[in-house]
Length: 433
Ligand SMILES: *Cc1c(COP(=O)(O)O)cnc(C)c1O
Image 1 (cartoon, rainbow, N blue to C red):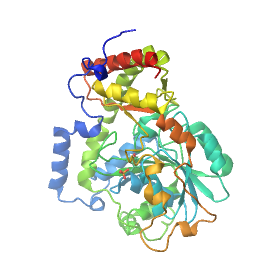
Image 2: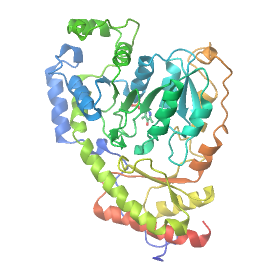
Image 3: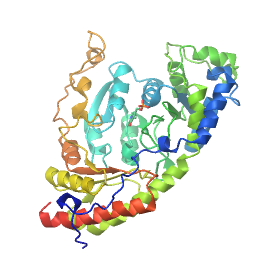
Image 4: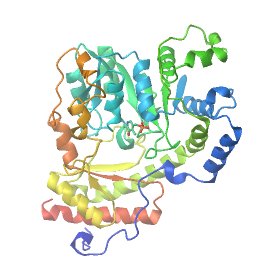
């Protein structure tokens, strides 16, 4: 075992220059994006429905997602991944007071999407995959459950085979939250194309960006039409103007809002979609190298890697491992940080990380935008939230150290990060950590 003096003990850091941040598409914005955005501006028709589908960047971005996912329908949204989730839920016919099972470890937007459409988010545990624990999902099902939202966290796929099996057995709809795993796969299928619908995000922190925006994909025509109606208060009108009647059947009629994607951001998103495969390939390669380095010391350091449900489908944008105790996790994260590697513990009471349910104050306290208390007043049984309600999730996150990976790290930087793992892991065991 290499026994070099740790940076945390005053030794030299394994990575001396700051690493590029663990961001993806946003770091790739370059001349192609500039040209596409300027071209879209010069059209002077940012409103997508003024352009024929063959001229519209929004329509072409949707076509790109239909191809990528092999889905029949795709709906581009200016309203982000959150808008994709709300439209997906409305599309599925989720209604006021229906229960929707979500993991306690996801961005707060997953819970918010349920609430704004009147659904009650029911929190379930994650397991050592850091995604929904199928056994707990099954325990949380009641006669009022309507849907499940598996979240593919930090690029790693949720365990879709058992989750789909549970959903089918109980007659539940499945909406995949793919905001953090755009381009990932599970058993060879694109994430987002396995459940009844998939919701993507093009926000700054995601795999690719359209500045803001999202995409909903589905094979279900009714779901698509209902989602599209929700995303534009006059959707029926634009469809009729396009001769939508020939698609067969009537469009449903109810009030929507404006979650449309504009042509300028769509143009940016299209260029970024072309970069997705390259970002994935590079991140996956980096993660494989780091996993090898970690494997050399994992046993000695008592580090157990996150269980990745499909290694080939992992986006490779994060590397997480569990220590035996929260103290060991804190020490490992600090020692890695001292080596110049921005690893951190996930659950730390000091940091209000909105990815962990304990920090979702408006959910836990049932705070709403008005004084009626809706949608909790629509719940069909008493719903209680407590900070300690998901002990397995807190136990796992409390012992977890995670590192974000960027395609922008050079080979030399990756070797430095690998060296940091060898150094810190090589010492951790001897310190009883
Ligand atoms: C980012 C994110 C969302 C919301 O996406 P926006 O584009 O910010 O609305 C939803 N779910 C998860 C898991 C996310 O990470």
